[in-house]
Length: 92
Image (cartoon, rainbow, N blue to C red; front, side, top):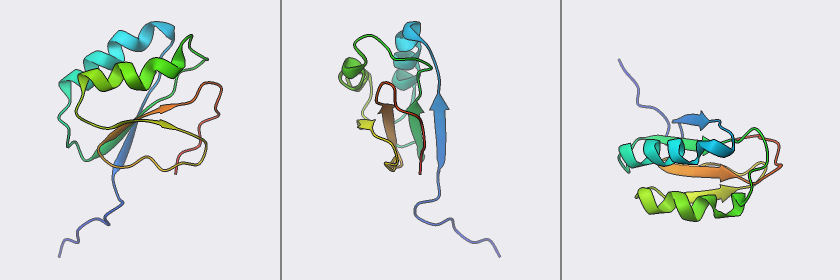
């Protein structure tokens, strides 16, 4: 007998990149459906110049909500999260 997963049981995909990663992030988002059943998180390895603009820029290429998350925040399913600059990453 197969059991169904819990409502909050989904995969989190982490995308890392540097200052040149914006186009790659946009290309990935553009190719994804809005209902992937996963959460996506950008974790740049260093503070990006104008990082505060990332959610706004990325939201132009996807129907998924693009969120800016802080330490300890939960990343919801079917969303794309951008961690704040200089934030150590700890996802729930």
